[in-house]
Length: 438
Ligand SMILES: NC(=O)c1ccc[n+]([C@@H]2O[C@H](COP(=O)([O-])OP(=O)(O)OC[C@H]3O[C@@H](n4cnc5c(N)ncnc54)[C@H](OP(=O)(O)O)[C@@H]3O)[C@@H](O)[C@H]2O)c1
Image 1 (cartoon, rainbow, N blue to C red):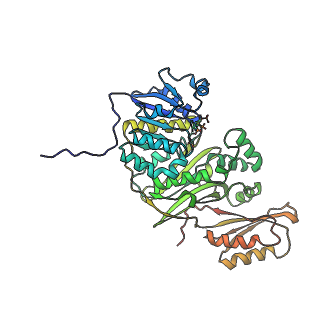
Image 2 (cartoon, rainbow, N blue to C red):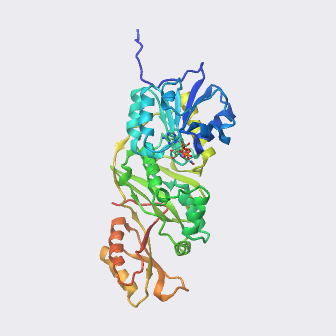
């Protein structure tokens, strides 16, 4: 006779009793999640608690008007910890106090849904282990690309493939800025507009310098490439040095410019980078405009798959969060595949775009060409648009594919030339079929 064995499957949320949901954070996404939950009246789901600091202010807000009177509002975290909530949804953001509170909730046997990319990028593996230890679930489908179901799409829809490469646009703020610059606006004006519209923070560094996208790229690498990367080791490059002239040259090369996040598995190393890059107009990555997000995965068996849509905003993100809540309630989370810590390098083999601004004198082109030849990089084309003064002349050199470290060596020596008025701008040119360094 077979003996029944105790398994450690995640706790099933009872189908007979409604699943109780508590919210931590009633801001942009939190209030939208409450709205979607109350408007959709999902059978078997019940919003029971809303937590936020200074709760009276939140309770008096317009966003609170549709919340049923049965919901308990609190500014005391222990009320959530000690509540009978089955699922707690964390939408406060940041590492502190979110991490400590999530640990307590998981240890208390509550499943957690979060959209917190920094927390998941930096602490994901240890939080996942804690969830497994306590037989509960930790789900974060909204942490990358907001309302675009990239994470559940990769986990559930592409779990059967071996994904070797991911690339795309995961920061809507940078995409808004660069796609408006493509139409002729300058960086400072567009950044100010983005701040006025609430797309960019007063300090835009996390977005424009690539740190937000880097956290998301690390989450995607974990899920798609099964590779655990140290976010601080992923190379980033700011978009703030891109000028209108670069879009004009990019157009001549059949390209536009986007902040691209890309990671590619090469045996035991992951090549990863977040940087503005020249993107061919024929690539799907060039098609996203405004705050749209776009992620392309390349699988060994299934080929390329493109995900695109609204990467941010209260309601699109709330849809992803509520879908996670439903998935936890229905226990339909995909099997988590093993993840390995991988070394990360910013090295890619790619053609490059170099833009110089010089005080024009005879011999500059041959000096630049000499510096490139010295490191073994070959020039592919030289472009110079008319109409600029000789004492501040922009021109562009593109190279044949060469290693990032090779081109950086050449740029460092070219930057020291007397005629250079600014540090040269060096961008990778994305190819349809990117090669990896041998
Ligand atoms: N907004 C988006 O489009 C989007 C998209 C994808 C993912 N996300 C992620 O979703 C999360 C929430 O984003 P959001 O845009 O909704 O942020 P938000 O508007 O700033 O909302 C955060 C809420 O949490 C509260 N809060 C923060 N720290 C707290 C603390 N220590 N104690 C008590 N309450 C606290 C805030 O209260 P106060 O009002 O007092 O500050 C605010 O109500 C973040 O992790 C974000 O990265 C957002």
